Length: 408
Image (tube, rainbow, N blue to C red; front, side):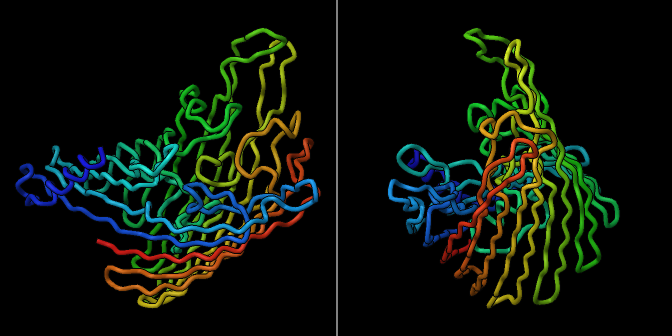
């Protein structure tokens, strides 16, 4: 399959764009990327350690030694990317286009494999656009950090690409966005782990509505609201019997963002009142707040987290950059029945503070950089009465990352 795909790409690249189909034009793009990293301890870092989130809590052995206090590191190139932009004919008064984008960051039991990053079609009018397919989650948005780490600011900046139907309308300096989203690669947590079944059985997609304001040159600012409604279970085992249940967990999140672009520097920031956004690589989730004694049907309450980040970059050829991210657990809306019946990412973390300091050398097609990232997680126990964390203690990881990228 891999050889067939490479042969097809070679054939397409050898053809003039205008000869492939009338009224269509094609443009390939992408990069070759290598990541060399070292950590002082074990971390929550999917994609085989490349997608770095936060240090893991202490796990003590029989002698009281921390099993997670073990250095690790590696070198990978599987985030190398290939994309295809397609400009098509007009459909009525709309300009048609499409995008296909892939990398090698999908994992099987033994090796990396090709995965879909983006795949969508779009229709553009003078002031509006309709997009159908998989692309960036609107919470990722138009303001994101400029940094070397593959996680691009997660778990403070939402990171997610999802199937969606999106509508955007532009009027003067304003842009309105409305999206309905489903889950595929980035999944919510629940009673049976991470699964798309919770949103599939819900029959209600994720919903987002937002507004952006752009000045003539320097400023971009905006805000948005997000809704997620999950069905954690459709059946339950209770007192050795199986019952059909009707369960739902619905909650809202709110975000605001701003960016200033100068001649040689940028300053960007985002803040989120996040509620059950673990499918976007943010810390969050929900727990059981009530159990029906007759059939075991459960009610749920979301955890709420305050999440913010600030990013500053300076220069063009030589570019130093600073990123600071902070998350705080604010607890749950309702009391929990137990601290064990919770589902999500990092729910025993009270606070998380991460700093990324980087410098890169940039040419037209090259980027070489190094980044140092100390990150501290404060772990503790979940208090069932409030959902907040008590008796916390700090755990710190130091990460050094080297990146090489060649763009084409």
